[in-house]
Amino acid sequence: MKQIITPAARLEGTIRLPGDKSISHRYGILASIAEGTSTIHHYSTGADCQSTLGCMRAMGVKAERREDGALVIEGRGLDGLQAPAGDLDAGNSGSTIRMLSGVLAAQKFTSRIAGDESLARRPMDRIMKPLALMGAEIEAIDGRFPPLTIHGRKLKPMRYEPPMASAQVKTCVLMAGLHCEGDTTVVEKISTRDHTELALREFGAAIDFNGGIITVKGPARLKGRELSVPGDLSSAAFFLVAAMIVPGSKLMIQGVGLNPSRSALLDWLMAAGAKLRVMNLAEVSGELVGDLLVTGGDVKGGLISGATTAALIDEIPVLSVLGAVSRDGLVVKDARELRVKETDRIATVAENMQRMGVSIEVYDDGFRIPGKQKFRAAEVDSFGDHRIAMAFAVAALAADGDTTVDNAEAASVSFPEFYATLRQITA
Ligand code: S3P
Image 1 (spheres, rainbow, N blue to C red):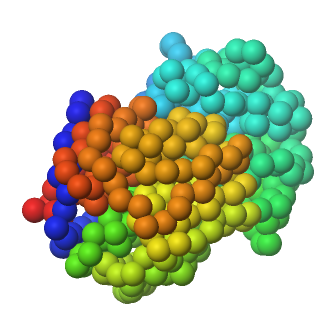
Image 2 (cartoon, helix red, strand yellow):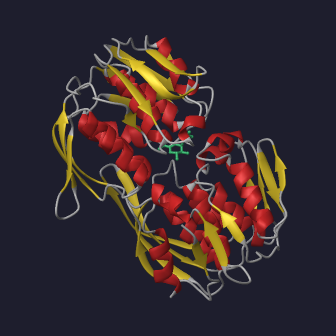
């Protein structure tokens, strides 16, 4: 599908975003292995989170949308999953395959989990190694690519220090740890999003986390719960940047997840010149939630490196758009992980920037975009990557004519309502 994006005079209005993708995955998996019923409000509408539910359903879990939109999951308990009849389908979702593998490795059955073409190119050795240390037996293509054939085993607990900053790897190990006798610990050199830790606490697991050391005690008896998923801050990022780069904009985004392990984005945007107000802070299901009011202003640009890169990893495509029109430009370093996302996001950002007439210097682990550039109307491509589709739809708002986004439907992986929401605030 092609989307034609017309430059915007300004953005105005009040919006709410779909439920956070990261939190929805975790609630979907944990509710399935909990005892009793969970009611989850505002579960993500994105295809990735439906892939997680599809996998859980294939293992006998009843997960249904109620008329009011809430998702009701009948948990089967820690040992209640059934062997799936065929392959589990993770679709485009790295979170689904990596997090769920921790659960599958501890089952009494063998399962095979596969995904789409993009997922088939994403490295799984980062979860296979720690799971093997716990006693898991997993086969993969060339030892590291999906599909994964996972022979369930009784696993043993361990202490693990992931070599890369990855919340998915941490979560996979903790998911496996839930099934072990004793303490499983993950030690993080660079802290990553802590939604798993907060979710496990909500579901009643014995979990301890402090200063990058996370310990879960197994076997865990999780209790079904009523939970509410906040709006997705990574989805909000597209609109925050859009409001910043289109002069005269004023946008209110309500009910956004502001978990401190994700909200480095807000500090970074404010340092880059955003006029941002955070209002109505509240805690919902253990997560911090609030409203964001953003107005357009002078955009400065900046640097993303070190621990900040890990904290902003999903937002870098849209921040690159901000960088191009900013006063000082943008430098991104220490971002090798971008090369193994849904696409090689260093390459796909660079390709679309060039198509829109923006110069960019590419490094192995990042890029530099000089400031004060103008987007030329062009034909860009999502390359099947949701965040690339949305980032360049935002760039198109500031271009000198209509821009076409090819394969624009990729946005529905995390945000099916993206283009409709964009139309609502640019009308
Ligand atoms: C996620 C962690 C990040 C992020 C992904 C979601 C999560 O991946 O890019 O979109 O929900 O834990 P990594 O763990 O690979 O950094």
